[in-house]
Every structure is written in structure tokens, then in C-alpha cells.
Amino acid sequence: MFFLRIEDTDQKREIENGIQDIVSSLKDFDLEPDEGMIGENEEKGIYGPYKQSLRKEIYQSYAKYLIEQAKAYPCFCTAEELEEMRKKQEDAKIRTGYYGVWAKCRNITVEEAINKIKNGEQYIIRFKSPGREDRKIKHKDLIKGNVEFPENDQDIVIIKADGLPTYHFAHSVDDHLMRTTHVIRGDEWLSSVPLHLQLFQELGFKAPKYAHIAPIMKNDNGNKRKLSKRKDAEAAVSYYEEEGIPKEAVKEYLLNIANSNFENWRRQNQEKDISEFELMLNKMSVSGALFDMTKLLDVGKTVISRFTAKKVYDESKKWAKRHDQELAKLLEDEEYALKVFGIERENKKPRKDISKWSEVKENISYMYDEMFYKEKQDYPYQVINNKEEIKNILNLYIEKYYNELDDKQTWFDKIKELSGSLEYAKEVKEFKANPELYKAHVGDVSTVLRVALTSRTNTPDMYEIMKVLGKETVEKRIKSAIEAL
Image (cartoon, rainbow, N blue to C red):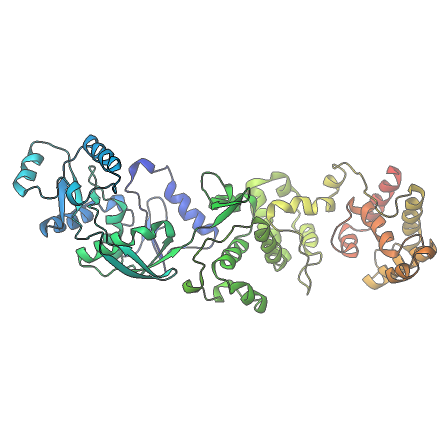
């Protein structure tokens, strides 16, 4: 189980409707927290409030406890004093920070502190670290394995001037009170482990287990860099919904780069839901995986190929209503759309031509007359490109061979017969064996029909397309193609 806690103690970074955006993004991927925030001002669970800004008194209570235990103290240093201290440390080429002899307010007496507060001096609360940099701590990370760090000796701020806690302190208090057992986070937080373990220890809490995930990387002109929210559109969760990449594909792809054994598992369990795959933290890479959009879209094609025609229709329509009104209008006739999406679907080798919902219109537009005739018809004929020859094929097919009631085998046998009557090889292998005996082969004749009916050279099964288009449309399009010659 997991809970959704909103860590909003940095009020400057708060954005309008930010919580609802997070909740909605999680819902888009079928992720609903077991407890925590479920709306901008709604929550569920027994360990609330789940917004840190509403837990101010809780943090201050624990800060007071640490002060009473001489494990924390008020600090009256001004921003100017801290900046001067930092410059001196840099000039001396030593570590910057508030520690050791540099911790100016660490040994201030209680009486001095009380007097300063009574005089209205601004202050913050600092943690009084018992650590020493010359000592090491050993820690077992659930992904990185055994790691070793110097102890934390920094007297970090735990309560800011506005009375709210820093992330470090709030994290320690909340993870204890909310019964957190595992914290999975980016490995930029790995260096904070000594501090966090120290805070848990000094507060008298049991620390959760930590798993630090390597960042997803991106190839940037031959150089690897971390996927960036500022630079890369694909770093935003909203990008996948806008592009129409199915949530199932995104989850499959992420599992693929998360656990090296997922791809083999999927190959052996093609019909199983990904929830049956056991994600193992110790099988996650300690270095960042490279984000590959081409691979993600390939996964998208495979995922969508497993969908029923009804699911493809429903998901396409839902996406179109948000992002493509022209497509939404095309899909108003559900009965016809289901026939279109049913072409080469729900069989042993389903079509794999759609990787995301934003590609649907391009993939099906030729099945709709209003789009077919709206687009410029270039009719990209291939091997057979002589106009008179193309006219002969199309005219003969309509006049002698086309029958909308034919089954698939009969239909194909007629294409062969048509080919033979015009001196084309009835079989591709016959043409390859004796190319000098034929003009071309049955596949090239089929291409002429395909281009005339769809204005494309690459489509799903032609027989199924013609069955969906119907007699009237087939005849109309072939006549139109002849006229265009």
C-alpha cells in the first residue's frame, strides 16, 4: 500500500490546484493511494492531516522536545552573517556549512536565548548534530546495497522562521507517525541518508528502509544527462495523456527499464496482467536507464494490439474528446468505427500499426469518405505505374471479379485469376523463378487495388478493408481512381 502526503512546507513553490493535478495524474495511471490526499482539500486515512502545512503544531512539539533534550537550539544568525561565514569557509578552502566551530549559536545559554527572543530577534531552530565527519556510518540500501558515508555533523535547520519545518525534519516526524516502512526515492537523496538516520535516532524513532532509484537518463547529442522537467516534455506525466500513449504501455515500459527480468517474463506471459509480475528492488539498476521513446512506442503498439476493438474505440474516443474534435466527430458512428477497429484484431497475429491514440486519425482516415476525398489523392502506385495498365486492372476487377459476398479465399483466388489474365504471375514464387515471363506478380496487382481504395501502399488486410467499406464505396473509389488517371 502507499499513501499520498503533500510536502508543501516551502510555501514559495506552491501552485494553484497542485494537489488536484497530482491526484488526477495518479488516477490517469490507475494509481489510487490507500490513504492520504484524494483531492485539493480532501483526504482519507487515520494518520492525517496529510498536508504538511497543516501539521505545524506537530513539528513544533517535536522541535521543543529536542530543545528540552539539548538536541536542538534557536539560532539568531542573520542572512548576512551566514553569507560572511560561507565566504570565509570558501576562502579557507574548507567545507561550507553550519558545523563545529562555525556553529555560532550552538552553545548559547538558555538565558541568552530567552532574552534575544523577548527582544524580538528573529530566529530559527537548528538540530544539534552529535556527528563527526571523521567517523563513518554503514548503511544497506535496498537498491544500492552496502554503502558507507561520513557521519553528518551539520547543524541543519529543522524549523524555519515562518514556523514550518524543513523537508528533512518533517520527513522524519511524518514517516514515524504515519508508520512508513519503506521510502523509495531518487538517488539525489542518497547523500542525505546520514542526516536522516541521525534524526530518527535522536528523535527515538525506528528508521524506515531506504531504496534510492537511479534517475532516468536521456541521450542529448551523444551525451547522457538526467531527464529534466525543465528541458524535456516527456518528463511530465501530463505529456503521455496529451500524446495519447496508453497508460498500460507507459507502465510496461517503466517496468522494462526498472527490472531487467521483466522483458523475459512478458515474453513468457503475454496474456497476464502486469500486476502479476513481482517487482524486485534488488534487481533495479544502480545506474540510470536510458529513456528510449522508440522503444516506448513499440511497447505501445504491442499493448494496443492486445486490446479489443471496443477498448480501442473507447480509449480513442476519450482521448479525441479532449484533444482532437475532428477525430471525435469521425467516431460518432460507433457501429462503423468498431468495424474499422476490428480489422485484423482479436486474432493470433493482430495488427500493430497504432502506438498511441494521437496516431488513430492518421491510421483510419482513409476508411471515411469525408477524410479520404478531403486529402489530396496522389495514388502512389508502385511497380505497376503505367496508367493504361492500371486502368485495365481496375476496370477488369470491377466489371468481372468484384463480388462483395465472396469469402476471403474466393476473393484472393479472383485476384490471382485477374493477374493471370493480364500476364502477371499468379504466385510471387513463380515470378521470382522466371521474372522474364511476367510483367510483375499478384502482389503488385493487389497493390494497385490497395492504392486505388486507400491511396496508401501499407494498410491492414485488403479483404477486411473492402468488407467494411462496402460495395458502394469500393466501386465509387475505384471509379474515382480511374478518373484521376
